[in-house]
Amino acid sequence: MTEPTDNRSLRARAEARFHEESAREAHLSSEESQRLIHELRVHQIELELQNEELHRAQQELAIAHDRYLDLYDYAPVGYLTLSRDGRILQANLACERLFAIARKALLGHSFSHFVARDAQDHYHLFLQHLQRTHAPQTVDLRMTRADGTPFWAHLEATVQAAVTKEDMAYRMTLTDVTVVHLLQEREQRMLYTVAHDLRTPATIIKGYLSFLLELLPEEAAEQGRSIVEAERRALRRMDLIVNDLTEATYLQSGQLVIETEPVALAPYLRDLLEQLAGVLETARITVEIPTGLPAVLADPARLERIFINLLLNAQKYSAPDTPIHISAHQQGTEVVVSVRDQGQGIPAEDQPHLFELFYRAPTGRKAEGIGLGLYITSKLVEAHGGQLRVESELGKGSTFSFTLPCKPRSK
Ligand code: ADP
Image 1 (cartoon, rainbow, N blue to C red):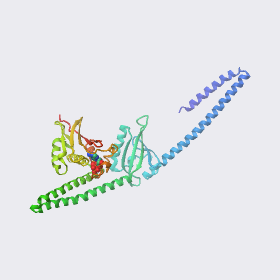
Image 2: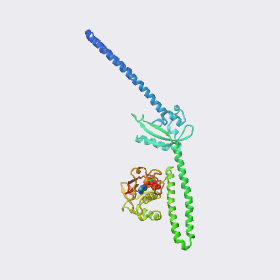
Image 3: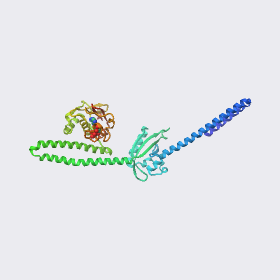
Image 4: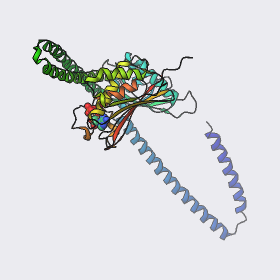
């Protein structure tokens, strides 16, 4: 504490100045003394005014501080300050409600104490990331209140400016997002039930169609076969939608597991298009894969879903008989695969939303669809470590491109 020393030295300097000035004043005429007294008086008033100003500023500061405290304490979200090792240093009143514990009892507790057991790894990774990057981070965590009831919290954290590493602290806001998660879980259960309920009758119909074909008399076989084949194709399309729904439930519940292996695109696409001859208008599709293109690391079944979704869209949103072109090229350690059509194109304002769940551009609403395909395709591409992009011009056509990692060259 240096203040008393400072005060003492200020006093000593003032006394010295007073003696100096008294000595000078002893020689002053009465007119000069009058002027000096006037000066001193004005100076004194100035000081008094400054003092009043200071007092007012101090009062305003106190009011602002109280207002800030009210805002902090009565905010609808929880505010927390955590020490570097994750202990709660400060908390607002909303935290009492969120954690079902008095604020006093909360302080000093480790934040991880309230994180659900199965979310601990997730939380520690989040903190490590925050510590390493110093950039704001967000996460949704499953948590447990002091009374044992579970809840979902959305956390936003920043690193508080500090002089030393030891002083480092985190500021967090915490919002209860349990309702959102319950709705998502319900949506997932609904998707799963719909997918399951559709799959069972589809399998039965498929079986009956084969049986029907065998029962048809010889002379009716030709016509009958084409009808049954058309129905089989329709069923195959329904299968694809059911697969998309199932995949969506896996994606949303975080259960998607991909198993990658090296895939050489040229033979892979040749086989795939052969198999899909009944489902896709393969005559419209051309493929251009440069020789020497490295194999990609992909899950073959998921890669099939990516291609089917993009090719079905290209076909669906363009005029019959217009070409659809698949091409690929290497870019650094990745391969970029593109599916290009000469269809109706997509308005620029819709393009940023195409990969959202159930989004359909108004231009495409005449065609059958539910807005699931591109959402799943983008998530599947991301699960491979790649990215899906779109370039499109109204009336000219669209190109959907995705990246996949190359298989590293063996030394
Ligand atoms: P769906 O085709 O079932 O509507 P998608 O998720 O596959 O769902 O596509 C979302 C939307 O993107 C479509 O409704 C359509 O408006 C637009 N779209 C996708 N692919 C194309 C394409 N190749 N050409 C034009 N519009 C497209």
